[in-house]
Image 1 (tube, rainbow, N blue to C red):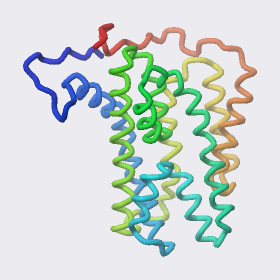
Image 2 (spheres, rainbow, N blue to C red; image 1 turned 180 degrees about the vertical axis):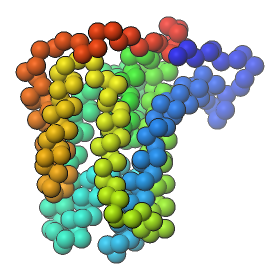
Image 3 (cartoon, rainbow, N blue to C red; image 1 turned 60 degrees about the vertical axis):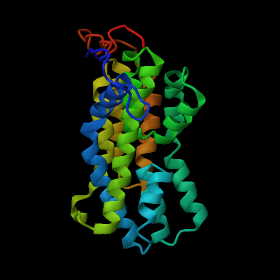
Image 4 (cartoon, one colour; image 1 turned 90 degrees about the vertical axis):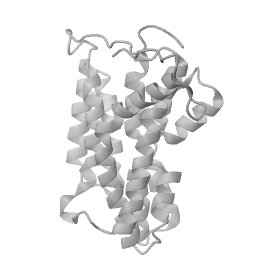
Amino acid sequence: MTTRPPSPGKKPVAGIGPQQWRDFWTGTVAIAPLMPGSIVFGLAFGALITEVGLPAWMAPYASATVTAGASQIAIVEALRQNAPMLIAVATALVINARLALYSASLAPVFAAFPRRWKLILAYLMTDQSAAVSVFEAPRWPDPVRRRWFILGVSGPFVTVWIAGTAAGALLGPVIPEAWQIGFIVPLMFIAVMVPALRTWPAVAAAGISTAVVLILKDLPYGLNVLIGALLGIALASFIPDKKADSGAEPATDPTGGEGS
């Protein structure tokens, strides 16, 4: 996709140029298909907060400070079961250990960004926005345009998540428990991952991880996802690296090869 250069007659809005707004909007469009799932999951978390007797304001506060739905639910569930605070926090840290993997993948993507941008974007990162940012980064060689694209990916997604949790806390359990909406988070992540499965190790890692997650679905606190990811990566590393889709077209550069 080629982005047209800004019109010379247009003026900056809020100190931000039209080109940056367009790059921001492109990022928002890239993450938009995953936003409905984030809203539904947010509604469920917000309702859970009030169900266990915690104040409604804690739902958006938790989503704005932790920004990790799986660990947020794990903490609340542990508190509901009267688990010691140490156990609740340790559980959240185990589930969020995956963020270390994201950091390693995002480091080269963020390398050319100023420190303030690194801090802002790191704070806004979620599973979905991290995956989209890593996959799309090669299409944005100019670091200035890339950071505005990533801000468009991560900022609106987190905003939708926080708004969903606030609505859930205010509206209560509007989603039937029988729906078992916990599947939405891995489903969103799979939707992001599938386009990147271009080699046999990647395909194997996805297949092994999915199988392990399903087999160990009864493990508490979402540990099946963490174990599935680790086993998928470990076992797939023994598979020869050959293209699964030799006819795949290389990604096009939305910048048209021009910097700003």
